[in-house]
Image (tube, rainbow, N blue to C red; front, side, top):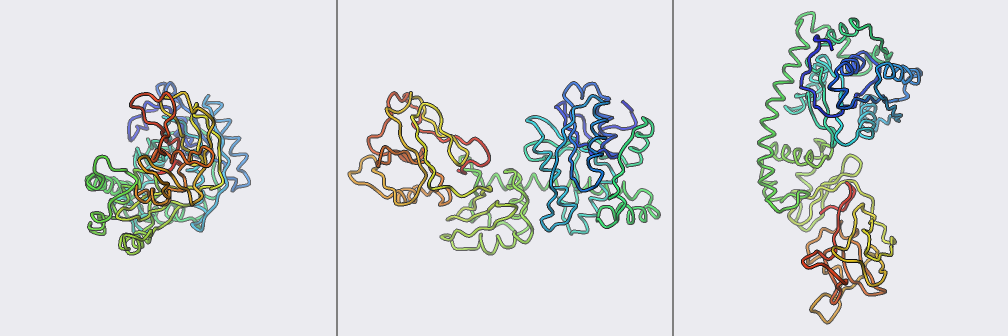
Length: 438
């Protein structure tokens, strides 16, 4: 392995998936990683995202396959459709690549990308021109998070000239994307017009801008520590992490509240809340009456919703189907429409097959110690269960008699046979991000 390139951060020791476009930068990265026996031993693969935006896209995919075959590196080709959503083709292509990477990544695998010092300088300038604060000006990190995975940028400290020298030294062949020659795209304009002009006056301009990003990153890290301390104070031990108490949250200064909320969303892998929605959240949600269910929505269905004195985070989720039904004998866990499992704990099953449905409204339940039936709606209100969770609760029936409501309520006299001492009778167990919150 050439000593001309040294990693910005040490190799993770985990299997790597390399984003491989076939261009100069990713060609150098893949070749450099493939020359490292320890990285190969940990597991090395590549992924090529086929955008289909250029006539030569198929030829590029073939080129990438040939390079990977020569290096003996397995290659995944992910075909995507670029949708701009009104944010322009650059953002649309970036979102498509991110989705493709997440689809291809396996548990425990890291993604390696070939961003370098010049890319960092461009990112710093782009974010400064958009009015970003300290977190945004920190630009790209050597190691960061991508969904539930880690993202590694080992070449971030090296200028593009160093990558070009490496490619020539090793006689590498790469693709030249003709769209890179167009300054219609913001990043290309900075690369072709602005940074060369700056370099005429300040030869180390790119390195200095990247250094500013690094210092912003250090300051941002200190701020994040303080954000986490405040967030920990808002989430006392034993409280659910999917909601925050509104009074102490609203009492924070505006800028600090925005940072704490940003940190909270990051912990739940939720997309950032746009700036204009922070203002809407302050005025129409946090400042609303406690009996209103005010909310803001963004990024395909994520919601921040007020209920009583708490702010809840809700991931995108379809509406429950009130007509869903199933038969269940209790012997095996039952898959529910929200992605969770309902299981009977410590028992061989029910004496007979029972029916399971979701709420349709008007259900009544005879609670232990009562000689009459109560409206299920009143019972759930008494339990202070948020309204949007009530439609996903599974109901267990024996004919027309309601026996159980999730793991929250059991009817009088209902006890399956051979339940182990101390076992929870019925359990709901989430199986994925679509599972019912709370």
